[in-house]
Amino acid sequence: MDLNADLGESFGRWTLGDDAALMPHITSANVAAGFHGGDPHVLRRTVALAVEHGVGIGAHAGLPDLVGFGRRRMAISPEELYDLVLYQAGAVGAFAEAAGAELRHVKPHGAMYSMAVDDDELAAAVCAAVADLGVALLMPPQLADAAAGAGIRFIPEGYVDLDYDADGKLILERVKQPRDPAETARRALEFARAGEVESICIHGDGPNAAELAAGVRAALEDAGVEVAPL
Image (cartoon, rainbow, N blue to C red; front, side, top):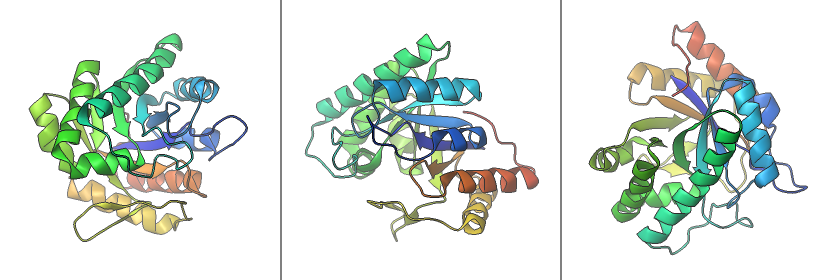
């Protein structure tokens, strides 16, 4: 089981989350590229931290909405979405290459993530960009068919620090709330036993994200689940 987290979302003098505390507990990092969060300096620093800890590097592509942290929907075309994903992944990939690593996956952020789940044309645009990049796509199981159609490697993921609605879709929070470590660990074990996902996500902007990630990893390993990068 892979354990991923959204990181590198600080910007300028504004700091969000504690990437240094979270990185030792995860196996894949979704690094913000500057559209919903992050900036070139933060991007470089986050990639270097991932390399230091042997953590796989992915691009966390978001809508161009710093003020709304990429969690507000925008009216964009499939072509625009393709360009947004390719542009941001290219930035993360360049910093990864400069650090002696490589880009392994793409994971849309926030509203972009939800829009791709809800719209087949947008899902196809994300998958087309990922196919041209030659990396894997990290998304919920609902994107499996679109990924198969694009011929890309697909990594289904589940969340332990967000809730799902009756249709199995994520309920996004504008501001992350603290979560119970025991409950998140229990949910992670449920995912592992069900065998429906290959990666579990912890949000880096959560108030106790490092504590949650440490607890989830310990619970998985104690249950005999190997925790490894994509």
